[in-house]
Image (cartoon, rainbow, N blue to C red; front, side, top):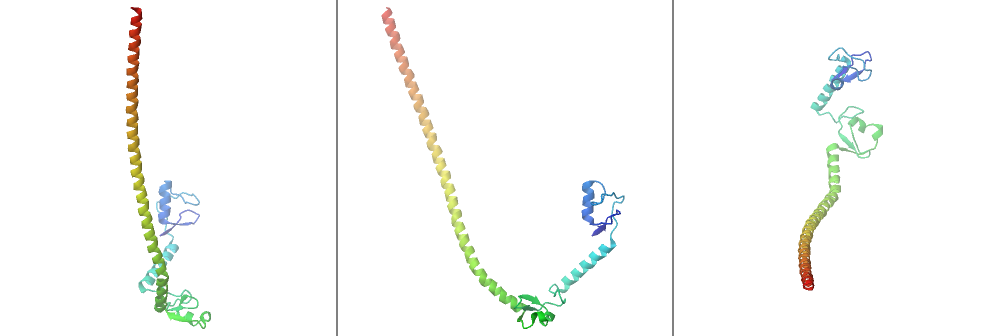
Length: 199
């Protein structure tokens, strides 16, 4: 529903939009001229209201009678398909100068022909789609295999390096232990020699 802006500007706004504007601004003012309103509800613009109601009524009547397929020039039901211009026409259009010596078919017949043509052009596309889906499926499987293979290899590498680290650590500890034992033996021998010299 369209409402008339209560200010002197005379502008018209959608009621829901104007109320949203007022809620967001926390003041009741015209979005364009910024003049404040003393009323909670702007007065209804009767001319626009009547126009909207007439439009909605006409639209509903058209929908209920199934007259959506009307000629925009003559407001007559579209019954034929012009093969030369590839467009829907009414009986008045058929007899007009624009369509002189043109070939026509009933809409249902023309629709069936076009449906068959579309079906024929759709078949290669459907085949391509099947092939694409097959190739995509294969690529997806390959990608998944590569992912699993990479994860397995990574796990094996980590396990091997863990073993290698453990081996190196054990080897380091063994060599250091051997070195300290050797040092202790040599120190003991030197101590014994010194004691032998001093006695």
